[in-house]
Image (cartoon, helix red, strand yellow):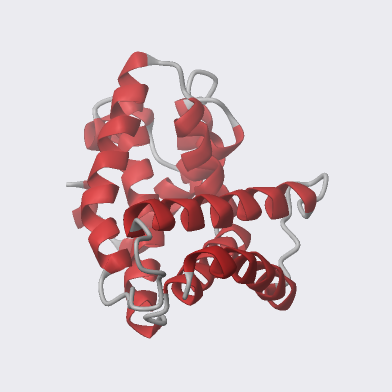
Length: 205
């Protein structure tokens, strides 16, 4: 029923909810503040979502859909080379973190939640994402340059772990006190190339 509302009304509700849940923990988030900002009644909010958890899980999946659609649209443009594609996707992720900071804050908070119901939601969501995107991420990759005898699955895990750790470090070092990420695509690309070249020496022929 919420999906049938006019687009602007949906946007106001989701924007107010995102502001609240990105800034507060799930337990501290207030539906009173959400309805005040969205300019709707609390009864109407719960008519659409039944309760606070219903709103939260809808919002999480909405954010995943927005971010995931960008990945899906971008994947056909990526390189078949393993290192280049993972580099491109890492740069894409940090671009998203700059332009969708609240969406990422929300998802990072969910990953740290200790509430059993929310932990279960997170595990279910990550399983769904893996099923939906992992195959697309690996589709069309060229493994011909790997050395004979290299375990490709293990090699991919090492490459992904390295790029992920780089991304986490970059975000930590380049986010200011106000939570704004300073994004330098050229610098990121050059530094990722350095890591890629080190790994290629051990993995490629």
